[in-house]
Length: 294
Image 1: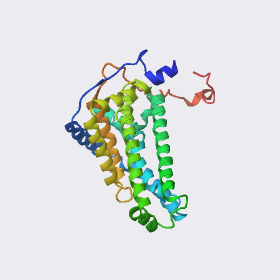
Image 2 (image 1 turned 180 degrees about the vertical axis):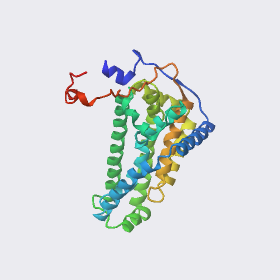
Image 3 (image 1 turned 120 degrees about the vertical axis):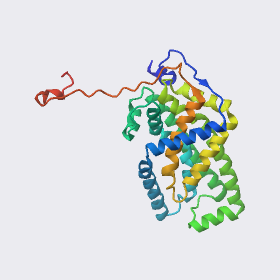
Image 4 (image 1 turned 45 degrees about the horizontal axis):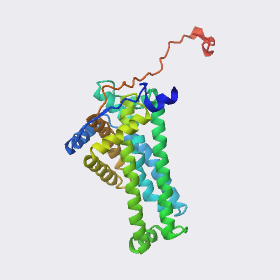
């Protein structure tokens, strides 16, 4: 029964949300509403707290040697692959603001009380597995062209990549394979995570709905993928600091894109159930520490 709920949600049978046709105008509206959400609920400080440690770890790895240098670009590109996981709290904030609920930043953690939490974790593990496979493939492409020896310096690495036939093969192969990974993640995560927060549909239904959205709107969703990639590249300059703004805006915009692309009114709503805090009295101590005490 629990496994059935994980895949199909609250319904005994899989309920398919209705997929709408969307246009580039819907993408612009989603971006505008995402920017509006970010200005109303700024969360750049939270993303800076994540980006700065990652940047520090990368600089430490460079200072201790250049063995991680070939994976610098694949790691940066990986932001796009794990973006749907990083933005899960932003979807919740946009959902609450749209519904007229309290949209304090702390409510981003209400995801823990969602009935779809198991399905969210399952899809999150799938994206993490894709991210790790991407890193392994990227390293294999580098080794196939340059061998196992680590670069001796940043300048030597850049020169080898940009001015040698092996470097050109690396660029072509890496870009082509990375594009396929990006298409896969876009297809899987376009609307699946926002749908799970909004409706109790299960991982299989959310995944299938996301695929249906992409198949029903191939050109529009391709344009959306290009917009996301372009904004992430712009946000990565300089030193990834722009991602502190780009990622929250894209996260909020993804929620509004889901609302434009999917009609899920016939599907059971995901009713969050935060634990009730019962009032405790000093006179109950220490008996209140035992589970039999009511």
